[in-house]
Image (cartoon, rainbow, N blue to C red; front, side, top):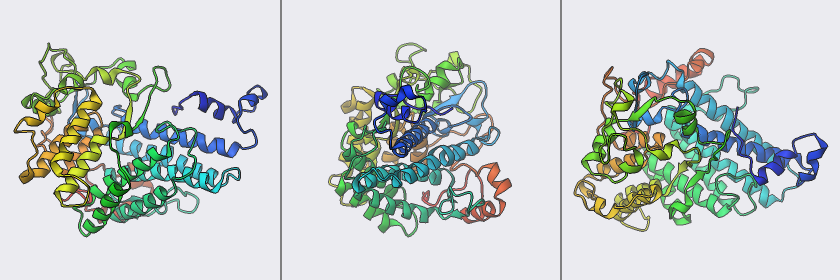
Length: 474
């Protein structure tokens, strides 16, 4: 069952969908059910997107394992990179296509059919939908590579959709963001669990997302000019400038609106994960103050020992996950100021016009992450020779610190490693299998859409977990 956030505003809007007359007095506009349904679907898709990217259920999301932030205890298939035994790619694919993109598509149709909306407000709400659609499409591309895009979400016309070239999709996503940003001038959705209807915040989010997309493709063959234009235009229009801009969702203390981490780590009553030695050893070497919040002190004050990655680990013998991740109200994150600042450091190092030096953006990125986690000691940390920005080996500096800063955001932590090939990861103890660079396509695609799946597999260089995406050129 999908989570739906019930707030004072959302109750009023959701009530309009009910037939019982006792609810009609709460309905803001009983003559306009289309707008209510659009808001409801927009909210539902938003929550589904956050939940999917936040969860740590091994049936749903194993990105923290791929990033070697965490490792497993009793059941170790996923930390040894068996991603098909539980059909994990299928779930991720289905969730983003069905419960996010399809809901957003329907929300857009209802919004565009709403005769009660002004042209400006309609354009703004469609733009909000577009921004979340672009975010989701990018997640799918960055997970699989080539995917169904132009023929997707229309099963009647295209029951077996073709796969589009990933680089071409990226170019279209930039164009869609440009249009959406230009349309953010009216009143947004009242059911908005990210920015509570603040359209200027949505503009920053959209520009920061465009910065991410440009940063991702900057080294891809033939795309450097497109990337530079996207990056510089996003910065000129206004990206995140503090943690107050972060794209987050506030989970609640009661079901069904709790953080999925709480459901997986507390409500389940299971002890499936410990901190991985990959990240713990690295942070120990740097005496990183963030260990006090990333991890628990169950081994004694100041003692952190990660479980060997990919091994059977006894839960009581290794460092546990930090208390924040056990809080049902702990926020979910789609994009944050630290991540944006790392992208800007990369752009500045390349000589792009982004307003400051690479070193300053790099220091800002790390500081923002310390601040976001409420940790002191960033100045001493930045002063360490092994942390200080190294312009002669800048990809290692940015990649390593971005990987650390994206802790608990497994997808982006894994993607930082894929982008910069830093730091060096461990091979899983049990199998020694290589670290995946993508998900394989879902089994259902192989069985039901075989011709198009086969063509896509050939186009990307083979449907293997170690096939690199078009932008992964290091």
